[in-house]
Length: 126
Image (cartoon, rainbow, N blue to C red; front, side, top):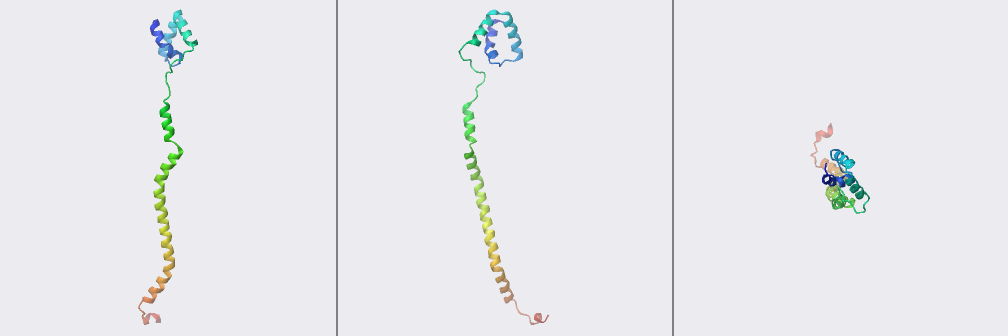
């Protein structure tokens, strides 16, 4: 490895984003080359910021968190479930109403049907 190739790897080495296949030749070169050792040490103690190898996408994180807000989730759930719940309640109310009608009018219907049956005099004798 020569000095220009080594200098290209300095930031990766300082950020610890260097693979073993690149690190071994670089360290071998640094062991032999005093100029590169001094330059690398100067970079280590310098105050200038090094560009990070990876930076998070904060816009994506913000959009994701906004999409997962509990209020929005509850609102979407309410919009999906509420119509079904209303229909279920209406069906239960209708069922209760029919049950009440059956309880009220069934005795009346029985007596009315018995009264409307033709009377057979022989049936009374049995």
